[in-house]
Length: 455
Image (cartoon, helix red, strand yellow):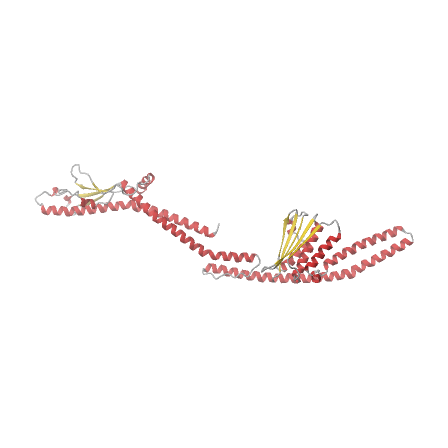
């Protein structure tokens, strides 16, 4: 899962938790606001009745004080205005059959669902009535008792919760959107870092990164740049060392070829001459046994000389240094075709301009083709072998060599083989800055090498 999505998911979870907490707080505050409204209603009505009490006391002093209220009638429209919705107020001592004076409760918010109406009173408890004396200095003036309506309180709480949730949802959506954009913008440089690492994996170690504003990303970018520089230096050192080892090995191969030709070849020629002389002398003396032995020695010597010539061809300087890459590849394929008619079919496919390819790149390409053809012909039961050489032009100038056969074989086992042939071409391709892969093909193996030419 992408980091941006993970952070956004966590942000949405936090927003959801905050929204839930805000809902709980809004429910509690709205439910308890009824208690505050009840106390305020009782206080306002008590103050109004206090003023009425003292006025009646001054104007009608001849009347008994216990009859001052609620006469004249305190149940007026002005008193109704002092009572909050969902609250009922009564004067005590109350007259006979007197009903409480209640504020407007019809249409007070939306009807809450049953589960809300059942849960809220259970967890938040019931409401208490508020009692206020009409006059603190005259206890006989009576008291005002305000009682909240439980159903109205739940309706008010539900209405308040709905309003709060609407606003909270809009704020949560806005916060989530803006925070997501901010997170995506903050993590956008990570894509440049990943791209640089991917280029490093392909061998492009010098990947210049932009300057990051974030200190953490700047530290990561600096570390990636240092890593790329060290990898490039290590790769250059390894390639230089490998090239030097290959040069030393080629010198040894040439020296060995000279010694084989001068020493072993001359001795084989001498053995062949002696065998011919023995065969001729034995024929004259009619000694068929010795003549037969001499002929067998001659045949064995001829076989050794053929093997020696084949070894000398492989040990000598490759033909690309003399004929060029294209001509040397054609000569290589023709030489294999001419050795035996029973050999499998070899198809040579040359693509692109190969005329100006020379030096180590041409030598490496020839050695790869030579080794792959040798392995396919000697170690497999291939009936058809395909050798394709392609030059990929453009900014990424490179030479592609692919050898496929239908002779079976286990690609994984061959790739892990420590044979001298595959090890040698791996070293050559690595020294040239290229890559080598061994994969299964249709009915056999596919060996592909990429050799850069732009260097």
